[in-house]
Length: 590
Ligand code: GCB
Image 1 (cartoon, rainbow, N blue to C red):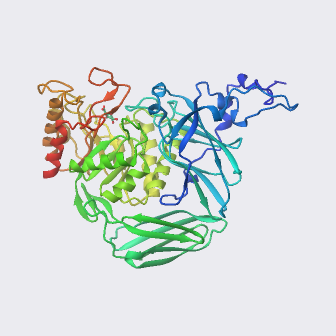
Image 2 (cartoon, rainbow, N blue to C red; image 1 turned 30 degrees about the vertical axis):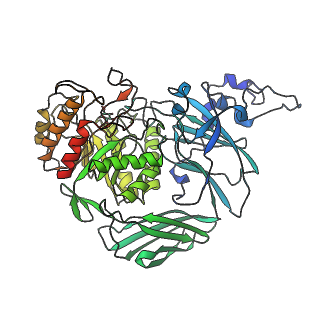
């Protein structure tokens, strides 16, 4: 018989399949409980931290923290959670110390916390996001694994909690071919617990989810749905919207209830970001939220907001700041939206993965429409069913998180993927899924130009409500005259938004209009682009690439130095490039 006893202290060195035991339970979108605006306890702050290049925590089951063998003899320990260096949560480890800037791989976070029951019956641990794989261990027990670097997840810890608790989370940002995104992207691969870690205490029956929106095809009816979980799955839920004098009782059976009723709400729009206080209760559980009501639709080649034609005056952004990496602060989110508004935008494309839930929350309040996207980016492993499952799960986690945000008008299922049969199946399935779970929004994706015929012709466009079209005439395609040809060669039967165009420019770099990487060259590209696109009847919006410069390891020339310089502002946002003012002018007259 092969000897591989787990009691043998060194057996792990022979086990190269050590990871399989951590694959399940896989935490997915089903774990999410509606938590926005709920009272939670923060486990943010100072955690002990250790990069773990050889993955020894998982290999050697460090979480068991075995101190003695059966005979009471002391084992030598290769770790010491409480004496590891301290690091901030939430944060990307890359920004915490120079020595972690380029680290990719597993790292272990550890902290202790006290727990005393205050009458709650269920307790859940929530992670706002951790890039990319996370493995959760509480009090020497493995609780689950989550994959996907930008969406929230939760797990129940009711049974595992003790008075004194020891929590370890392994976060691994190793780029993987089969992951979503895959190994190659045009942005920086930050790592860590970079959004809030929290505890949620709930009664034995609780509101798992609820949605409130205008009913389909109506501006004078509301559609409310509620899902409950726990001990009791039937009864009555209540919905109150005091300002509208609405008090509805909803019958809940088998965990869910739904009602459509007449109402005359003031509608949400960027010009009038009206939010209503909404109170949902079931048994002893209650959630108070601020929700906007609006309708977004497409007819022919037009986009309508609340029944009126709109043009999406937008800009793309990454989730990044020089000091915080992906762990952007509330102040930075507000700053970005203010900058977009200063440019006269009514719309922002959040590329290329789910940004913090706070962006949509703040956009609801400040009045700006949003495109939200999952990182089905470039050469995804489209043939792999596990990859497909991962992408679908990220989509569902995003939709569950933000489905009550009026600002979010578009779900994007990806960006610049080659038009192959496998990709068409993969992404059209995502489109169908998004539409099935959320009929109140438009579905899109940012597509590539059919270069051979110089036209908009991606087969995925057939499935979309709005065609997102990236094009780089004047940059990757230096022959600018091809832009109008492309527009003429295309006969889309639905609205098109130019999801990207742009050109690189180092802040302050000046030159002739032929000098690449100068602000002057970039300005010229913006002038020519807007001039041509202005005349195209089916173009119903723009989100040029991109609000500010961002870190990108693929960009190494003397202007770039590790940054993509297509921003309209410098990475630290202290300098507005000439093209910023060009877009500001263009949008003000549009
Ligand atoms: C694109 C990608 C975006 C890149 C950009 C660029 O088409 O969608 O992620 O950063 O081009 O700068 O090349």
